[in-house]
Structures are given as C-alpha cells and as structure tokens.
Length: 207
Image 1 (cartoon, rainbow, N blue to C red):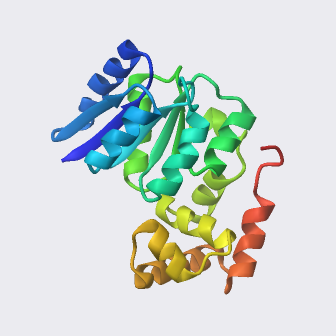
Image 2 (tube, one colour):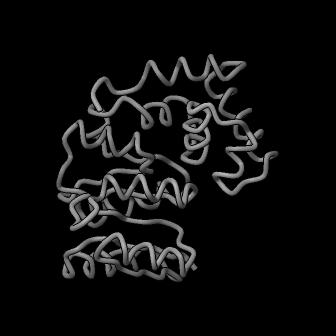
Image 3 (cartoon, one colour):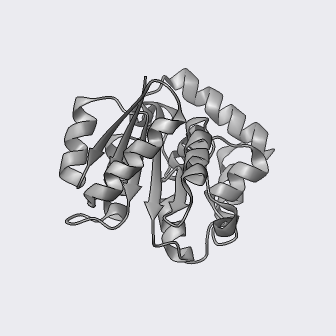
C-alpha cells in the first residue's frame, strides 16, 4: 500500500489532487490535511510514503513546516507544489530538504511523473526550474546521488557523525556507512572534507 498525504488549505484543490494521485496505480491510499496541525496528527497516526505540500498555508507557512517535517520525519520525502516558483523560493525549498518541487501550473501527468521519480529516489525539479537551482538537483543529476544519499550528505555537511546520522534518519550505522561510501564514490573523493567542497561550490548564491 502506497500512502500519500496532501497538505493544502483549499478543499477543492486538495480533493482534486487526491483524486489525481490515485492514478499512480492500484493500492494507493491518499489522505488530506488543511494545515500543519492536521498534517502532524495524520503523520503521527499513520506511516506515509510521501507528502505533497503547498507553501501557502494559514498559520505556519509551508516553508517553515517543511523544516519541521525534516526534523521530525527526516526520511519522509516531501514534494513542494506551489504557485511560487521564483529562484529564491525553489532554492530555499531544496536547501530545506524538499525531495522535489512542482509548479502549480504543471499538468496532472507532469505531477504524477514527478512523484514517480521521487518515490524511486530521485530529487525532482522540472526542466524550466533546473537552471534556477544549482544545488541538490544538479548534484543528483551530475553524480547520480539519490534523495536518500542527499539527506545523508546534508547531515554530513552539518558535522554529524555516522551514528548521529543513523539516529536522525532511522537507519543502522552500517547502512549510513554504505551511503557515505557510495557518496564518496559518486563524487570521486576519499573523505568528507573533499565531498563538502564539491557541495559548497554548487550551492545557490542566494537563499
């Protein structure tokens, strides 16, 4: 069973998205939430495979809530769906740990394709937004780093040890070591310092 959560304060939009997501295939269960509080209750009561989050919400905004989700559910992919798609917004969302960014003008098929890619481990940005964002998406595409590995790399950049990363992501320390080795191999480096030099060179200039 694939469980998806749609967070959008507009009921018609939310319900339409939920109907669209059922086209991902059989065995898809969709739930909706109108704000951060309702979303947290859902996430605490059920295990979800992906969250689709609108940035414009009442109360805590979507960007701030993305930060909350990354801290409380670090391994849960979050895809941003927003009418705000300027370079700064995209860069901030990806730096906050979004697994993808889909503009609201996208078609249903484009949205479904994006979600399929994210569920397969790819960090997604549509072609028209890739030039605006030089961070995680470029690393993922250029070096073949998965979304899960990007989360490990982000925590490496924060100075976390393998044990701390394992605890934060709900992984074993051995799995983290495998991810770190794969990251080093993909980046063609031999240590953390060299890896972070590559990452820092490809971060957006404005955040």
